[in-house]
Image: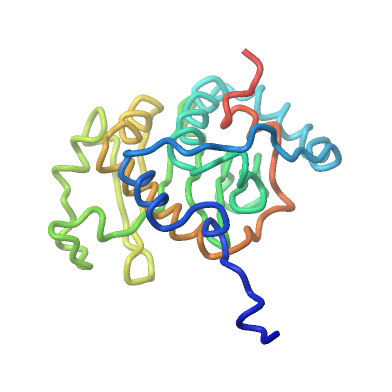
Length: 223
């Protein structure tokens, strides 16, 4: 058998065909998920001390609520795809000092930082979802729409990293972060970017996955 014919579908295509992905993207369907997660005790214990340190942070209550909203609305089939197609790192040792970071494939999707005693979020999305008529031009960003997605315009900043269809949205405050995720067009944009990268194949950050943080993203954390 040739190499080409022996290769199966990559990423989410192993679980969802394009029509199912599109239905989820547009909010027309809820996806059936795995009944049980594939936990790994050694992996869980490896990052348990970091999670306990995170819980002692003043931002922890708001952070866990935001993560639960993100996990249950922005990631397709989160239990079936956990760790191998998306992961969350707890207090990763990077120069920007995040509290948590969600990744898929080789890409950062969503990061939460301390902002004083509050939170600051960074979303990476497709630029075309936030411009008028979907054009790939920074000057066409629909700023008025973005500002309607948060509590106050001062909570919002954005930037244009390298890449033809990449856009970074930064939001201050747990309330504004939740509002952004509740805005249908913004939620669709977050979902579309996540689908793009979860379809690229296995997650490169499996080794840093924190099951304890993921518990809360999947609604299974302690109350």
